[in-house]
Length: 149
Image (cartoon, rainbow, N blue to C red; front, side, top):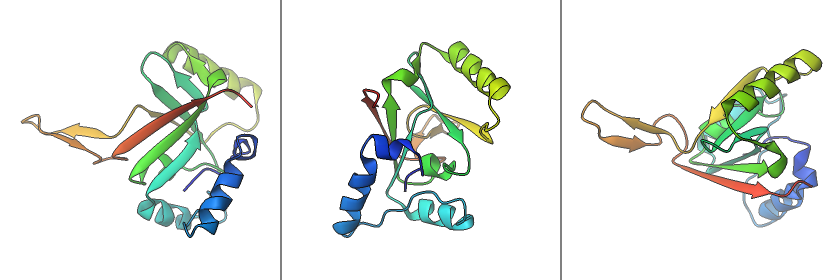
């Protein structure tokens, strides 16, 4: 499961996804016309892949702009999530991220419907501090930092 992002082409992920399909793997790019079908696919997907729009160096948090080409399910429902992080998206901390989001909202017509902050795999602990991984999201999260195309 992957976002239908224009950067897929820039980073040659389109070719990668085609190779996966030729080798018998099912690949689904988020499609705004599929509606609930996207979520159903994400629920059974092994891996979700998308690009970070802003990345916080301080906490290792990826910021995802959710829109019709990139649904929240991509980073939440598959067993594993891979964030592709262009170096240009890295900012020191949350203050720079919120400033960038505010400027985007002020100056662009196409603003995201939701902004997600993802910091590693889902972790939850009960009152006895028994840690459980993957309750509210993926069990494994991988960040790949790439030089901008």
